[in-house]
Amino acid sequence: MAERVVKLPDVGEGIAEAELVEWQVKVGDLVREDAVLGAVMTDKATVEIPSPAEGRVVWLAGEVGDIIAIGSDFVRLDVDGKGEASTAAAAPAAQTASISAQKTERAARTATEPTVAPTHAAPSLQPRGTQPHRGGERPLAAPAVRLRAREAGIDLRQLHGSGPAGRITHDDLDRYLARGTTAAERYPNDAVTDVKIVGLRRRIAERMSIANTRIPHITYVEEVDVTALEDLRAKLNEQKRADRPRLTLLPFLMRAIVRAVAAQPDLNAHFDDEAGTIHQYAAVHIGIATQTGPGLVVPVVRHAEARDLFDGAAEMIRVTEAARNGTATREELTGSTITITSLGALGGLVTTPIINHPEVAIVGINRIAIRPHWDGTAFIPRKMMNLSSSFDHRVIDGFDAARFVQRIKAQLETPAMIFIDA
Image (tube, rainbow, N blue to C red):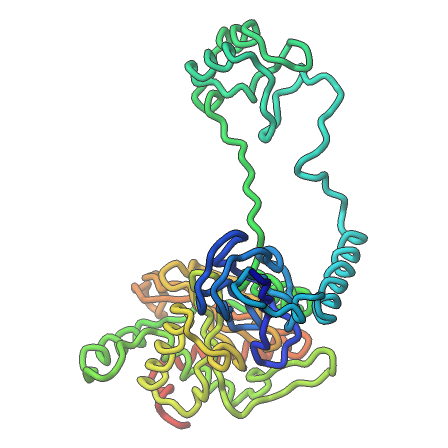
């Protein structure tokens, strides 16, 4: 037998490292050639790493969530033949650099973060007869006491042990039973589960932190009467051709945004806060915040300004389904210039959406509800919806934000304006 080293390959995009997000094998497993060993994530794409040979796994590069350098050892296999001793002789410089960088980063975090007691602390030498046992500790008790407690449905961790070193005795059980217990006391659940944030969820957390830290948000909420729009949407869906998608409210909003940013191009932009430069775009690439199994992603409807209502709807359906299925490409998940976010029927009355950095605006829609609306003479039932939109207050003043939302509101309340050039 010989050792075969599988290195983390160059997965493209000119990156130097990737995050380990999944292992498909463990040490001791037999793997066939081309079997998937694990997966790594770059900025947006998840890449599976296959085995180049048949063999037994003897070493893995790390744990899920670790950052691994491109070209460093990923998996080591015991294989038949001579193997590749030259590649297994020593960890490459890239791997050493990655490990060093991770240690430096951990040291920096340790210096700035508050000290947290380790999960498995050394046992205390103080008497424990005055406090209940903690959730992760096994209380001291004789087998007969444990049996009696189990039959009575009592969790021994909730008892005060009066015996030596906090040992629980029959007398402790008697006192506990004598005072009476509720179901909640007999079956407490003090479990704490630690879930490591990795992969897409960690990417989302990082992006949200950047957006919330760097961007001073201003959120503007406006009520919109969408009764006429909903009537038009229903009629168009009834009469649509079989090759056309069913319309939701979003394609109408996309068209309204296209017309609104034509009048205010500074809203269809990126702000490079390090260079102090605003990049205004002629093309309107609308991001659609989409909930997927791993987390929130933003697929992009490119060149919304060049699409009609049904074409925009079809492209929105295509890219959001690709995002949910995990088949979206990097191009389909990057490059938006302004974003729409919607929780659909769960949209609530008001939201405070976080801007998709480095964009300067995000338009959020809330659920539609029938509310009484004053028409000047009487209250009448109307289909109403709130727009909750956020703006980067460093480059967008409150007046301009309000004017932008009012432009969208006017088009949604009089939907003919969406289709007619003024």
